[in-house]
Image 1 (cartoon, one colour):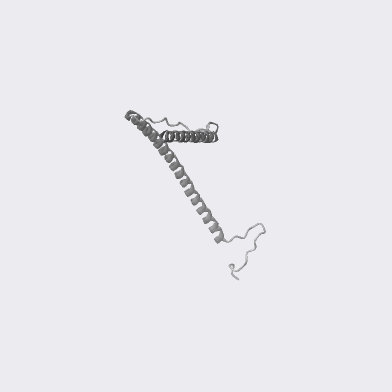
Image 2 (spheres, rainbow, N blue to C red):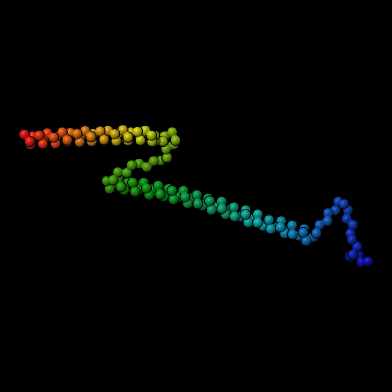
Length: 136
């Protein structure tokens, strides 16, 4: 028999690995390392893009604010009044009480309706007086 055909006896501690499988695992590992490197470079690119976008946003915000201020000054020179712009949005405790405003509006509406009714009643009385005077 040739030595090629003699089965090799393995020690129990030795593992029986197929060299093709091992090569594939090494290739997978190399692929993962390459993919990881691509992801790292992509993340770096995204971080750089984010920083650039934030800089552009800040620059645009400043330019827009200056433009609005200049426009407000020009409108004031032209005779138009422009209310001052708020520097920040109101916080929860500084927020406007909408329920109170609605109550005021309802009260004002009721008062206006009562005054209109009184005016109509006065007009009706005047019209009656005029018709009586004409009849007499």
